[in-house]
Amino acid sequence: MASLARLPSILFLVFLYTSINGDSSDQSPITACPSFDCGGNGITISYPFWHQSQQFEHCGYPGFNISCSDQNPMIYLSNDLYPITNINHSSKSLTLHHTKIRRADCPKVPHDTITVNSTPSLFNYTLGNKMLHFFYNCTLYPPSLPHIACLQYGIKQSYVFLEGATPEFDWHRYCESVVSALVSDEAVYRDLVQGFGRALQGGFKLTWKQLDGACQSCEASGGLCGYNNGLHENFFCICTNRRHSTNCYDQGALTTVRPEPNYIYVAIGALIFGGSVIAATVFYFTQKKKVGSYKPV
Image (tube, rainbow, N blue to C red):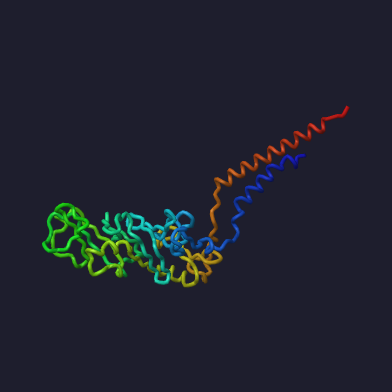
């Protein structure tokens, strides 16, 4: 009878143990960082990029976190979200689309795109791109310069120039706003005033570079670079069996990367299960007592 009375507690502990440790098999750390897509444009995203809401931070480089919005992959750069239209892992490049641009035939860029100081150090925007400079609603301007006719507002005129080809003039003084935007090299046509809309719609490219030092050694051994805090702090190499301190060939094995259990849900489930067992046990003993006290006439 005493052993039966302890049955609910034993079953509760068994359930709690299996709930916490059921997923703690030696799962490969690399398989814990699978490739993914957002379901929209069919772009497969993998290391060094990582899904910011579904994967560990160490599944990719810091700052390479991707979010999915309306089934489109997005990356956060220069205080803005940019849709990704293509990723080429062989050339380490990705193509981004300009956001918040209205009217494809005559768009107006609301603010600067990628700038030098705001771009993460691992990204480079100078290869394969050109910078356009827009001067909007100028009240005074040099004569005989072609202006953007579709953006003219009364006597105010707007202009666009390639970087390095802007005429000498005090543009900032006589124009309401000055905005710079990146476009890909192949999107720039000879008639920029007429073709800037198509150029902006084509987006721009970014290239990324491989991390050097310990990360380069890790990737060369078939591992993935992991960081707990920042680019150069708490580095570890994610290998097929476990984490290593330098690369997959060293002897400095660290703890295995495993998904963390959600203890809140485990606790709730354990309480519900334990309560059910206790109720069933009480019902069992109550019925048994009734049966034992019954005497036929």
